[in-house]
Length: 145
Image 1 (cartoon, rainbow, N blue to C red):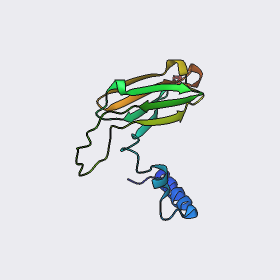
Image 2 (image 1 turned 30 degrees about the vertical axis):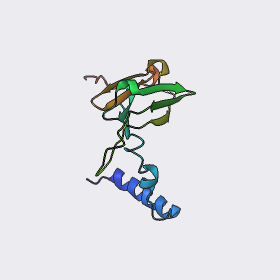
Image 3 (image 1 turned 90 degrees about the vertical axis):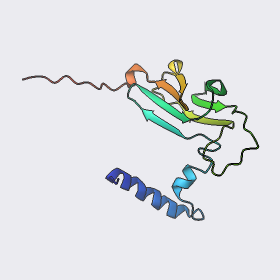
C-alpha cells in the first residue's frame, strides 16, 4: 500500500542513506538493528490522545521479570530475562528471553506520577497519561442555525 506520506518518508530515507554511504546499509537497517526482537524486544509507541502507550513485545516472560522506572524524565524498561536452556538447537530464532534495557525520553505532556503498566499475552503495555492541558478535545459541539 502506497501513500504520499509513505513515499515522502521513503524518499527521505533513501536520500539520507545514499548520503551516508554506510557500506550498503540502509537507514532503516541502521535505525532498527538486527538485535530488535532477539536481544532487544520490538516496541510500538502509540499516541491515544489522553495517553501515550508503549507496547513491548516480550513473549514467554513473567511480569515479575520486568522493571519499569523513570529517572531524570527518562522512562527505563528493563528485564533480568529468563533462564534459557543452552541445549536448544534453534533452526531459526526471532525472539529471546534474555536481559534487556530500553530507554525513552518522557514527553513534557506526560503526568509521570500516573504511569502504569500491565503484562498480558506476551505484551507489556506501559501507559503514560497526559496532563489535562495537553489532552486534545475530541468532541466538538456543532451549533444548529
